[in-house]
Length: 336
Image (cartoon, rainbow, N blue to C red; front, side, top):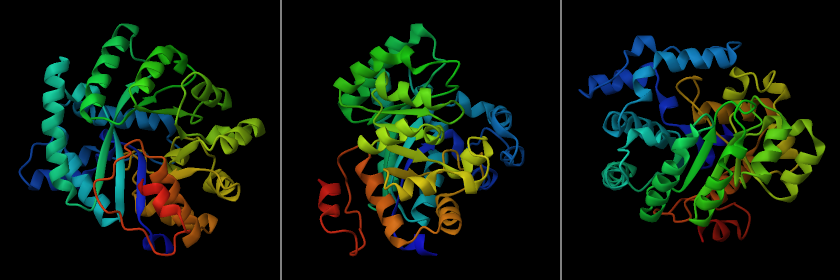
């Protein structure tokens, strides 16, 4: 397969969404604690849509309030899978609820968590973190989360935030002050938009949210003005093909806009979103795009370049191996 010859970068993956039966069995056999029995974690099926995903979240309910120590075996097992698939850089969305509410304790806990993660990178995979902020977050918690994000930004704990949730019910404009403050502290802003909502939510993410990256963004292709703007401003879109199909954002793979985005030379990445709940991997996503849209080596090289360039953590700890036949000058631009 052509995609196996280039490195992969994942920018859109939820840590809780990595849970699946094989991963939990592996952790259990290693003697680590698991919070859900593997046989109870069935993935979302095609046609089940948002309700199917909501049902999946119920099946993994104990992990929604789990602490970072319970998540470490999950993350470590997932990292091994990423390495096996040729992933060299990944940004994971994690819940602030994994850590202490007190800011001082939070910084200490996160430092220990991060040290454990770095020890598993083994010089071949760099993992960075974004705090996930639900659109439904009560107003009284917004300022507290701003303070927590700033504290971790100063220590290099997180490199950005991600806003996720039902678009139409909870507009991103609720977080306008948060966006401004966190931008001033150097954090990247990723907003899930254009998944189950329409183009208007993507316009809001750009105008109010000052988004650096758009998660999913499928609905953008219903509005020519928006597509032109995304092209002109070189906004990065995080496509998640299997997730988009199972959630109903795309009717079928043939109608997914990733082929058009390639033809328009747009800035995008290929991601799993929730590989456990949607029963996919980076390899399967790339293989799907290769078979359905005829992506070749040059296409996947462009995806790798754009994905690395869109990362929120500007410092690369390792020498990421780039194929020699990348376009001249591209490597230097990425690795600065």
